[in-house]
Length: 575
Image (cartoon, rainbow, N blue to C red; front, side, top):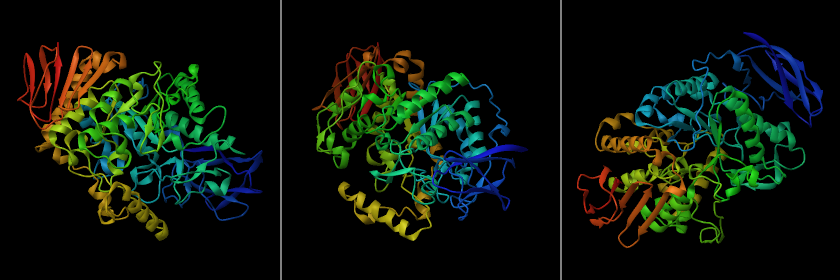
């Protein structure tokens, strides 16, 4: 269908801007720092911009880059998509069970349509929503998505804009909510056209991934608008239930109203407008409760955040690893602290950071505002060899991790394949054409892992196609042992959580965890439900006030006055 579309672009430094459509140049009219015109376009029409007569460039707000990040933009008419689920009521997300997945390696097909074919398995597992890793256009066909350069465009190799809409629609038709991971703290270096158009970046700060986005310097108003409009687009035009914001500690904003607060305000307004709940989740390593505190008490009003303290404490206790950031953790007491209070570091000295770190969560923050997990893309993929937890610990300890996460007071989140102890690793992979950039990435990965004790030859080549192939899930494993047994365990835990109001809805006020470091036993109480985990390889006897075993990881667990537990086992008890 042909429509009259307003083509507009922010180009404050240009003296002349033209839109190129079908080889014809159309002069755009200036309005302040913006240039625009009304043009007759059909969905699927390719176009580009020329600044001051220079070579054509893609649109910074391009919704589709079918020829790659260096090619022309393609016009998308969002109103033409035929949604099957037109009146999705939405999901509040916090307190539900989430599932993080990467479209490119979730299935061998690596597309949205291929992922749709596996959604019924997630429904059967019992999860409530999926958290999709970034789909914004990035270089090549294979990548994690965190080096995207067109925040408004959907990766074409995954299926483009309509493919993503089909995926969201299919999720909603099955009752699954959808969060999208977005990256607002940096853009990738390969194909980034934003510096050609205006001062999107600043030299005043830097991030681990390159230049910082100009959120509060001169000419930053339209830069902020670029990312705020992007968030609203995903939620409105793709019917998403929310988004996860990558590494917000790298969003440097000295404005009186921080970008996160402004985003929370505008998303809340959109939620009221469209009549369904929308959820914003932040990733932050600051242990700063202002991020998730209500605006009424000086917070930013973000709905939830990932809880790395809980992950690090649990991982270190299970694996015994004490290198890198794990040096700040190690004992079971840290796991109990996280379960009882959310953050482990609340102002004490961090050996890894070599300074004081964090502050306590106030009572206004609910436990469900923290996402709890034993694995995610970062904690698996940022290991040199991409080992999952099940590759590092025994099946018994992996079952303990699942029980603690899924029955915790947090919003539990799984990482794809975790539920059947997938044998496939999840490694870091890219597909760049620039030889200098490729070698820089290889060298950077090797250097990064020196502090973790990994040798250079242990680090897979990100550019090797086999690296992404190795990381692709093998769904046939689910039907074979020992994978089937682990899958049954996850299903049982999720079912127990969903059937129990105190497990599903209860917060810190109904939770109490305590440990015996010597015996390596952790007891987590959730109102009338008690989880007892024996992390020791030896049998333990535990006194607990319980009358029945609701779920046990081993048939040798016996409750007769005392609870008798074999090594590396976990039991869920009721009164």
